[in-house]
Each structure stands twice: as C-alpha cells, then as structure tokens.
Length: 190
Image 1 (cartoon, rainbow, N blue to C red):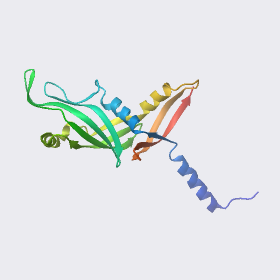
Image 2 (cartoon, rainbow, N blue to C red):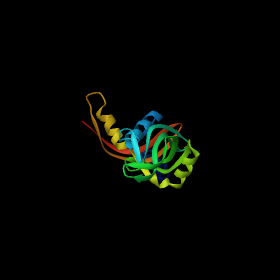
Image 3 (cartoon, rainbow, N blue to C red):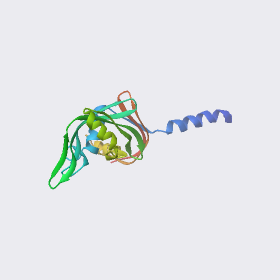
Image 4 (cartoon, one colour):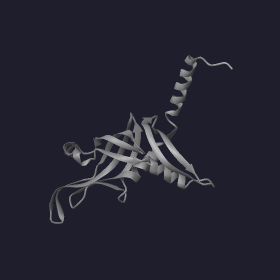
C-alpha cells in the first residue's frame, strides 16, 4: 500500500476547508429585495413611521435599487413638522420624494442595513432639516432572510417539504444589481 507524502495532504485539506466555508448562496434580484424591504419596514399599512402624532412623518411607496455596494430606497416622505397645539400641528407640511441608502451586512439569519444616509431630497429646505435631524432614522434596520426562506419553502409545490432550522449568513454584498447572500444552513426534509 503506497502512502501519499504529507506535503500532498495540505493542499487537499485546504481545498476541503475552502469548499466548506460557504454551504449555499442566495442571489436576490432587485424585485425580491424590494419585497423584503416592503415587508420588513413598510409594514404599517405600507408606511414606515419616523414620528407619530399630530406632528408626524412617515415614508411610503418604496422603490429599491442596488449598486455601488449599497441598497437605495427611493420613497415618498409625508410629514407635518412643527409644534403640537391640541389636535393640530402648527408647522410646515412636506411631501417630497427622497432617497435613503444603506450598506448591507451579515448578522445571524438577517441582513442588517447599516450606515443609513439620506442621499437626495427633492426640497432644499427639507434637506437642511433632515440633515440636522438624522436621529429620526434608526442606526440599522433588519431584513429577516431566515423568515423569507422559511416562507418561500412553506409555499413550494410538491410532496416534499423542507424546514430551515438554522441559517447563518456569512457574507452579503451588492453585486451586479443583485443582493448576494452566502450562508450556512440546516434544512430538514419532511
């Protein structure tokens, strides 16, 4: 019986480790990311509230684009900003389109949108107000990929059913106008 020299085992071992680093990949087209964003953020009758009350601000009608390593959400802001006076808001009404962008990062079974920034606002006066009050935007928001995969598998046709027990996202990146998610997971077939 011949034995392989030890120096031949290292490349094989490294190759096996490298191939096991990422068990799977999901590539989401822009339309799928659009649905994930709407489901995760705009879940209050199609709105994402920044402020509630007589003086209010909310985002609606999101339109997602992907590029330059960021997810961009063009959205309409509906706001009445000022001081509450009983059941009225004494102040200014706004209704422009604006673009918010974020950097996607991996975090367990979710994609976190971090480093949120307002890129473009249709109204220069509002741009100044928003730049001064960026605190209304959260530090990060999450897109639950694990839940989306579970939902997708539960509605898949056929006799076999699968349940994702665990999903650990290793990396996420915007590549070629798509969101590329590499992950390890445990799927149980029924």
